[in-house]
Amino acid sequence: MITNKYIKMCEKAEEIQKDWKPEDGDKYIYILGKKREIVVWMYGDINSTWEEGCKLIWLPTQEQLQEISQKEYSKSLKKSLVWFGYFVKFVRSKYQDDLIAHEYFNEMNELWLAFLYDEKYHKIWTGEKWEEVKTK
Image (cartoon, rainbow, N blue to C red; front, side, top):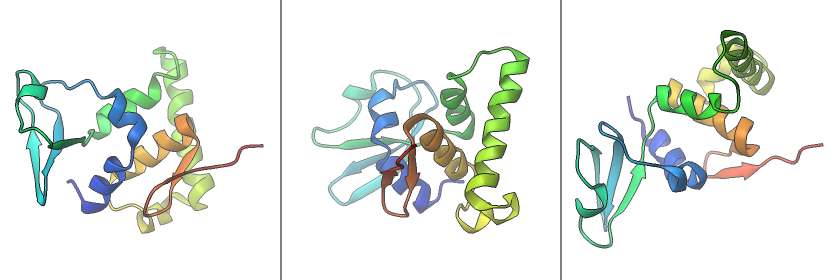
């Protein structure tokens, strides 16, 4: 499910947007003036598909977000478990208890995007934008 909140989070996620390399089946939002439409890109050159002046916002899937965040770690099983442990630690440390994460996020894509931004870019979602977290 793609929520308005997730669209906004992705729209403000400049780091992943600039690194996006479109692939067959990617979901994105097409924006031209006031027209906003969610599209699944199927094939061809995405740059020649739309009108000049349009903006495309990639809406990565949970699997794509996990793949991006896991690139920091080895593909070995042991490292994958460590990587997933970081996700669990993120949820528990940021929200005291995994059961209240649902109060902040409506769906798993939102939560995984928040984890990616915390882990890779040291930023948190404020509800309006990604804000850098000061590290010690």
